[in-house]
Amino acid sequence: MSNRKDELAANLANVDRRIAEACAAAGRPREEVTLIVVTKTYPASDVRILSELGVRHVAENRDQDAAPKAAECADLPLSWHFVGQLQTNKVRSVVGYADVVQSVDRARLVTALSKEAVRQERETGCLIQVALDAGESGRGERGGVGPAGIGELADLVARSEGLRLDGLMTVAPLTGPYAGRERAAFERLMDLSTDLRRTHPAATMVSAGMSADLEQAVAAGATHVRVGTAVLGVRPGLG
Ligand SMILES: *Cc1c(COP(=O)(O)O)cnc(C)c1O
Image 1 (tube, rainbow, N blue to C red):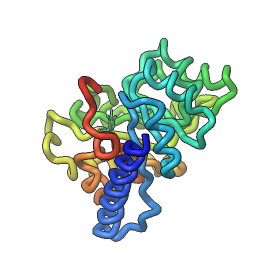
Image 2 (cartoon, rainbow, N blue to C red):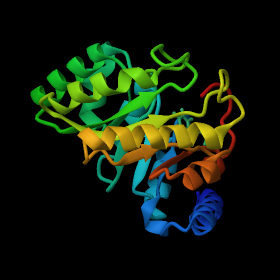
Image 3 (cartoon, rainbow, N blue to C red):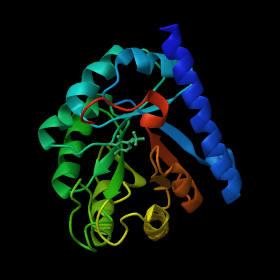
């Protein structure tokens, strides 16, 4: 246990240094970037250690794993972010623990989230997940809506009871025009965020960047980076 704590502390310090250096290089204050640690596939005991080490935001991508973990860690001062593709039959469970759903990508999901948030008397933050591999108006292979679909979905979230429109999220695409061009992809997301904020000024979150590309995301202007492997280690198997 104490070994694991030392390991996580060292990894966190390293990631924090990377974020600080990326901020310095971009001329941005360090406080502009929030670290979200992606704890998927790792046990609740790791989440507890991370909390002791000062982490305040964690993310999960599968409700089956996240729900029991969040329940075990309900006493900790943590914000939970849901970042995976979300089926409407999981919405009831996810709204129970998620402070922010970062993977909102279709109207039917918005309707389901709103209904559940109202029923549970919660306010659920929503990020529109943007697919930059989808063409303008298509859908991404790993979820997300094409750039042309953002406006309508954002308007729907903004007028849905129980929901709060917080901003945009993306995963650097592996295919399409942005494959291998993370910096360009994140800059495109920033332009889309600027457009969105003209009509929704409070939707300031820009969630982009993972273990391998957080520097590019910070350089482009991301406000939140989602880091798994670089803090917790390489995940065994899928995830
Ligand atoms: C797993 C995951 C991450 C973290 O990825 P790492 O490469 O382990 O840092 C970030 N965002 C999403 C949506 C993920 O599923």
